[in-house]
Image (cartoon, rainbow, N blue to C red):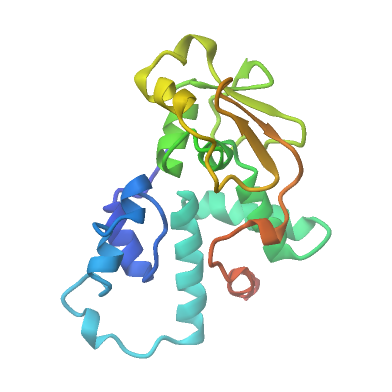
Length: 208
C-alpha cells in the first residue's frame, strides 16, 4: 500500500500545527513545530497570500496526514459520508475515528497512529477475540479490542499493563490496563474529536 514517506516532523511544520505523528516527542520541547515554527523550504518566507482554494487544499492535506491516508482512500470516506444521513463533514470524521488503527491509538496501545497501524498489520490486535489485520476495519459499539494473548509478554505491552490508565482516552472508549483490553462504549460524536479540523472546507473542496 502506498504511504507518505516524508519526515513526520516536516509534515507538521508544513501544516503549521502538531499532527501528533511522533508519539511522546510531540509533547516535549524537542518538537520542531515548537522549536522551528517556520514552513520547511528555502522559499518559506516568500510565499504569497493563500487563496480560498489553497486553504481548502491545506485542510484536506492536514487531515490526510493526521490519519495517515492517501488520496484515493481518503476520498472514499468522503463519498461514503455524503451518502449517509446528517452533516457530511462530521460523518467523514466519525468514519475516520472508527478505523481500527485510530481506535488502537486512541486507547493508548500505540503511541502514534502509524505505530497502531503497524500493530494491526502484524496481527497483534484482536476484535471480539478474532485477529484483525485490516487497519481500516470499522469498529462498532460493543466491540472489544485486545492485544493478542501470545503477544502480551512483549516488553512494550508489559510496560503498558503496569502503567496508569491514560487520561486522554475519549469518552466513547474505555481501556483496562490490567487486562490490556478496550471497549467501544458508543459511536463517536463530532465534539469527541479534539483535533483542529475544519471539515467544511474539505467538503467544499470536494463539492466543486
